[in-house]
Length: 174
Image (cartoon, rainbow, N blue to C red):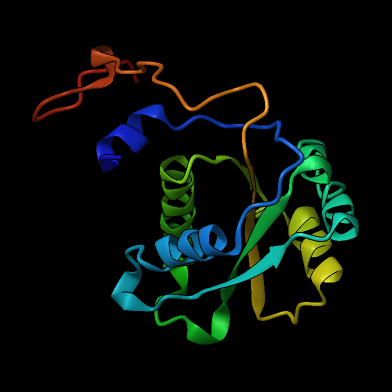
């Protein structure tokens, strides 16, 4: 699949078949994440791969929106290690790029995925920190639930809106 096709067809998929994600595909997702751009190449990322039902069920209580992880065959927890940061003010940008790479690779692999935010919400970050036994210097960024789509599919929904594009100078409402 072309990269641009994945960009245009990616959707938030929240229901998954009861089918495990193969180890090779999980590794491809992680490799994609680690190819992301990063401020001064600091690469602050670390990852926890969750596949056990008990762990996924516990993770489902992170937020009002994370319940779907209980029925996902796979969740990736994206973490940023403060000890790797040369530019700590950019860690969330680095992690967002890694997350988007995972979401796009998921489309290419025939998987569905949804991004569930943790940072900057302290209650969610602390939940993940406690659940995963993380030290204070490890910052939970997000969770990405993954699996083979049950009902939804990755398909184009054209969101292009020329009314929010300006050339040379902003001309929108203040």
